[in-house]
Length: 393
Ligand SMILES: Cc1ncc(COP(=O)(O)O)c(C=O)c1O
Image (cartoon, rainbow, N blue to C red; front, side, top):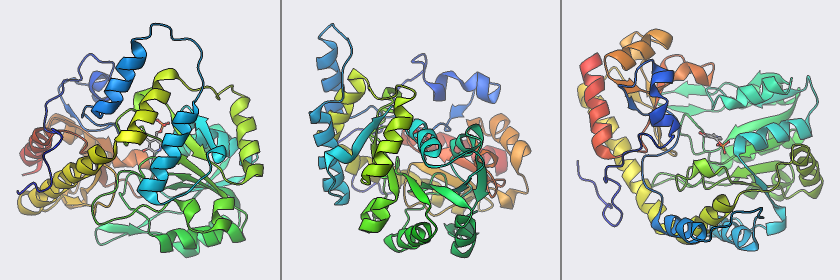
């Protein structure tokens, strides 16, 4: 393959993450029953974070007092500057709140904007902590299952309209994990229209919003119209963007003051308002200086996707890659192998030597799929493909 556009940053550089308390690498025995798998599951990357982040952390760490701190103006300014540059979204920093994580914010939003027993919409197959957030808050899950056609997905808007009548909140994954859809402005308009007419608050989880493959464009849901902005809680973070998920630092944008106050109250009830020194420093540095690194990262990821697609088409046509538009997560359709669920996962662990995320955990529609994390060095992707060939060839 011709890997065009790569070169300034060395994403091929081998990085050993073993014994760094990495969930992906150091929890293999616990998750897969063996430490002997190439881990391509949990959604962080095996790349070093941008140098400007590492330098900023080192500089702050050199001051040996790590007392209580706050999220600085510099942090909020860097974030608002980033969303304006990257997405053309102009927001006032007063509308931005801190949350230690996006899943935390989703739970807080469900608790702030609905009551026990109320309906909350999800679109499976989807990031599974959405289901837990609904269950743990004693809400009713309403599944607007995505429609798989060809090698991609679309939304069943008639079904969404029906479900919205009985819902208070929609949990939107945008771009979508795991199916890799980068929702178009038109689709977001339709979602927004349905939610507005039915008084449904949109919690738009845009944690993957910076990870857009060449040829696609991420539209923040709240940017679609002022009315939609008024009913939307936008969740963004540097976690996936710069591979700093371990800092648990994210930004929640709520332009509607009434909603913002309600959300703040829910966060305050668990004292989740302070943030941490290193998360602040890392975010500010990344949002100020990470553009070029991210642009090249997405070319590298795109080439990883192309490598997988070409390999499967020529060597293993019974396994199909869902059309990738965003994220570093490949959604692989194994229906042509005749295997699914537990049996499929077992074969992949034992015969391919891979630790992937079984599609079944993402809910209805995920049964025949496996999610493979391509946020890793190319030699590891090549090794993974050789493993699949050994198991299914
Ligand atoms: C769609 C989505 N939302 C949220 C998260 C996790 O967010 P956090 O670690 O900030 O809770 C992930 C991580 O994989 C994700 O894919």
